[in-house]
Length: 412
Image (spheres, rainbow, N blue to C red):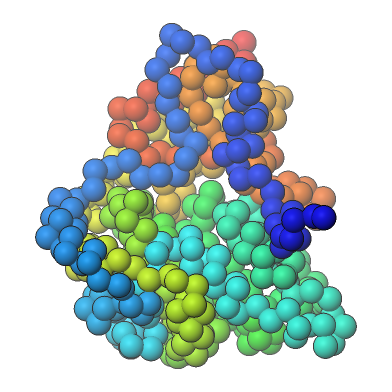
């Protein structure tokens, strides 16, 4: 007798880092070099002391069960931050904001709460569709399958600064779409959606009645004078003052260098927030009171965010020119990745490049094809690599110099 399991689990692909482990199996990296990893997008800058102090000062919160909707003070601090950051009226902390244990778990569970597997069946349309950018954060795909839906991939368009191209999606697909994930600033491309992009998405949401999940966890790491446009600000600018069918997700992980705290929020359409709260009450997604206190300290302080961004600006300004000598790469709009094409001067695949770089120079990068899917005849991540510039400047510069040496070695 077979053990009963959800058959949708069989649709899940290996995570990119498991694929990378398999790619490197049997390869011994050059011991002359200290290992440097640009593979994992895990912030390495120091956690601000004010956050650690707030956590330690509130350890007595470990003695209490947390409420799913979080404390009034936490929701108010998030509302205040959103209002200041995006120059919009404060969202209602009681109905339009919900703390979550990092944006990752909320991105996944939101699909479970909003997808209706029966809706499309009534019209014989087929399974619901979850629209995903391509390349993409793999949680989107897993969320789709485990909610009983199918992912559909909108490929990145280099002509649109690698933003997903929704103009090529046929009407028959839009009719089945119930949820659309969008990541701005994007992972791995760093692309930021414009107001025109948002207007297109909102019009499609109106026409086909799907929910937009706006993943904005990289919003505070940018390189120009103007902060990236957010979905809530775009909605207000376009007269969508109640944020219909829009849920924005953000996190402290990248903004405040606290990935281990697992602290973020969802905000937007009050009707969806109400249903998501009901789901999460059963799901068990409540944030520790101690983490809530530390999160309040983080959301209430902006200086550490400015200081953190300055470190990334310094780092990217030094690393990017070194890599531009050998790779097709440019400074992104935002986020902490460089999205580089490896075959500008040589004939090589992204996986071959990653293997050789690891073998000869002990530097780990992530093949772009691992972050995308074959869709509409192409894998938009092929022949590209993602480099996460999360370590200190010196380590990232050392990695860039090794990458340059490796590429020049291949060119000779």
